[in-house]
Image 1 (spheres, helix red, strand yellow):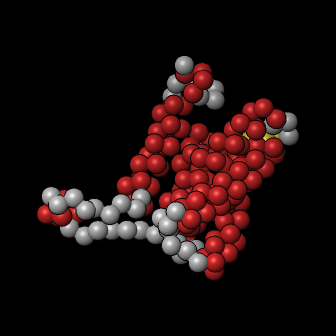
Image 2: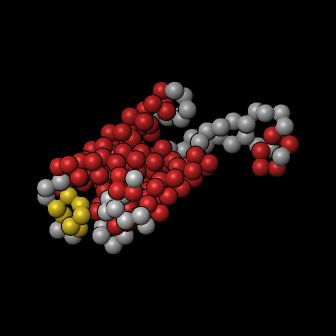
Image 3: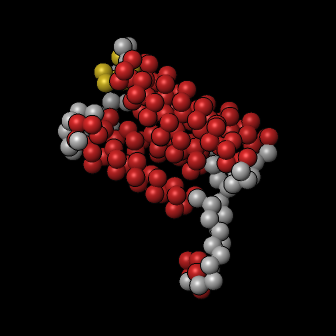
Length: 171
């Protein structure tokens, strides 16, 4: 089982990768998920006395860059990764291209899904602006994913890079 969940077969690797995914999903869900609270008893409790609805794309983008980008990079890199990157012998050009394409495409589709369902309010100006910013977010996140410095922490660094860049761009 350990071999199927880790890249190297080392059980210590499972402490970082899946834990990082779980922590990222928990954080994004707790802080960015839209959930109006209408239950009668909840409004009496101090944290729930105000309904908070966040229309931020930060959570959606940072999770999709992590899930789609890192996921497809691993799959494509493992099966088709012939051309290793000069600065990282465990990463391939094919995996990085898969990261870029998957992260950009799936993030755009997911954001569109949220907009069409009315879960995020957006006009055409925001969509165009996001499309441009997303190129930068995905590109820098893909580069960070290839860095050998914190290779076993790439789930954390990819998420934090996408999250930080989205905040920097004002989302």
